[in-house]
Image (cartoon, rainbow, N blue to C red; front, side, top):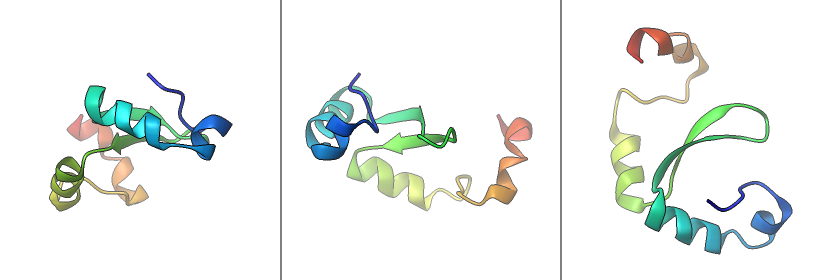
Amino acid sequence: MPALFDWEFAADPYPAYAWLREHAPVRRTELPSGVEAWLVTRYADARQALADQRLSKNPGHHSQRGAHG
């Protein structure tokens, strides 16, 4: 797994994205701020996720996480 969010990634993220698309196209990650997020690296997967009403970036929905798994 390539390192994400370090200086090497910031300088040239494309090799890391290529690796992720091939080996882990949908992956849970932790952002530098400590927030957990899903990293979706393939176009078709991203379109599907963005169209899914169950997914949200609204912080108000985060409290429901335990109820929905």
